[in-house]
Structure formats: structure tokens, C-alpha cells
Image (tube, rainbow, N blue to C red; front, top):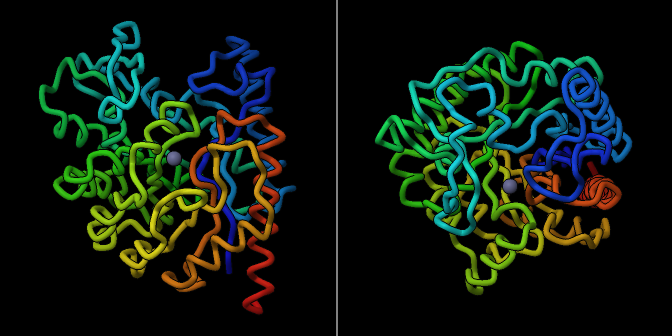
Length: 340
Ligand code: ZN
């Protein structure tokens, strides 16, 4: 009960990439870079285990960004044709690549780090992939002329990748869909269907992560405009509850999401965000426990998985590790409290 996990990413060591930033440039290249990615992956696993995390990830140490990491090995995506585009409904601008022809994977995208991770931990291992809607919101279209069609094309590629990862021994495949908190109408129209296409035929556990973004300035400012109650989940959870996706990872800690919205996820495992990634202040175990206690009013306790609000890539490493430890200690407090 109260098995702990994290949204996905962890900060990279300063010898691998520029610290405390998104899309951080690599510090090495060629064979030295591959070796450093391998070493960082093993370190990330060790640190999660030491912190007491139950369902670990490879910390996304081998990819530069949670969306573009996948796109780098997709033919039809031209990284030389980068354009400035407003993403997440123009919340911020990003330099994004362009789709210029029919999409196909050039081969396995994440097998390298998935194999390393599987070989170096006996814990349950989760692997994250970007969801179809979030991908098409982070790339320019110069070929399909129809963003929904492009989303389903990506969903097929994600499915091929997910099946390979499952075959490598991954226990949980999670699709990251922050765009689900931006384009709520589209989520019910086609977003959940595209997500299910990406997860089609998987027999491992499937999850979707929906948050209010990394703790970067653009997101923090956006949150200030969202009012006293953030009810975005209310529009999408009913469709997700009806879907075949088994777990939903959401943001709760320090957010204005009304906790009762979790009751819309009846039957699902709920990955309750009990660690705020937008602040460097480390939560106390008691603070973590209080979020979990509040969630227990709406979700059966055996369906609660203590988690982080979002990825921790932009945080300083010691802060991220201290937060993971607080998460595990908070979960332990709750296990003691309910007599598990
Ligand atoms: Zn997130």
C-alpha cells in the first residue's frame, strides 16, 4: 500500500548536461556522451532506491527533453527546420522541429537506457513517453495538414515503442500529457482515443500523467491566472475513467486543484502528486502525509500511489533527492497510520 513513484524525470549530473534548465545542452559527445548517459542512468536508479522509492524510472537521463527525446529517432521530423512556435495554447514559445514527411521510427528509441535500467534494478520500473496530443503541441506540421491525423500517426509509433519497452521488462508505461490540461475539449473529442491507440495491446500497467507543467517561470505565471480553483481535470477525468488506461498521475501538492475531483477517477489507480516541483523548499514527511490523507477521502487507499506533481529535471540535484526521501517517508507515515 502507498507504493511511491515519481512523475519521471530527475536532474542530470553537471558532467552530463547543463544543470537546472530544460532542453539542457549535453556536455559531451559521441561515445563519451553514451557512456555518461549510461552512468547517469545507473546513478539515478541508485539514488531513487536509497531514497526509498518503490516504482523507479531511469530519470530520463538519456534524453534531452521529454518530448524531443522521442522525436530524435523519428524519420519525418526535421530538426534542421526548427521554428519558433507558441505551445500549450501560447503559454510560452519554443523552438520546435517540423514534420516534413510520413512519420516512422528509425528503430528503437529508448531501448538503450531501458536495457541499462532493467539490468540495474530489481524494483518495479516505469518508463515515460510523451503522449500524442502533447507531441503535436510541441512540433510544427509541414506535411499532414491535420493535427489530429498527425497525433494518430505518432500514436502508432508510440505503440511500437511501448511494446518494445514492455518486452524489455518495463512494468509501467506512462504517457505524459500536460496538453490534457490545456485543450480539454479536444481530450474528450480525440485525445483519450489517441492515448488508447498508443497503449493498444499493452499487458503491462499503463498510466497517463497530467499536470500543470514543470516549475518554470512561464508555468508559474500561468498558474497565477487560473483563479481560486483549478477545475481542468473535471472536464477530462470522466473520459479517462471510461478509458482502458489504468493509472492517472496528477498534480495536488500546493496546487488549487480541488481534491474531490479525484472521485471522478473511480476504478483507476491515482498517482497523487504530493511533492511540489515548482519550489526548492523540501516538503516534510508530515506535509506529504497530509496530501495523501486528503486524497484518501476520495480514492480507496489501496489505489493511492504517492508521487511528485511533475518531472524534477530543472531542480538542483540535492533538492530533488531530498524531496524523494520526504515522499517515501510521508508514505511510510501513512502506512503506519492505516496499519498497513
Ligand atoms: Zn508534468
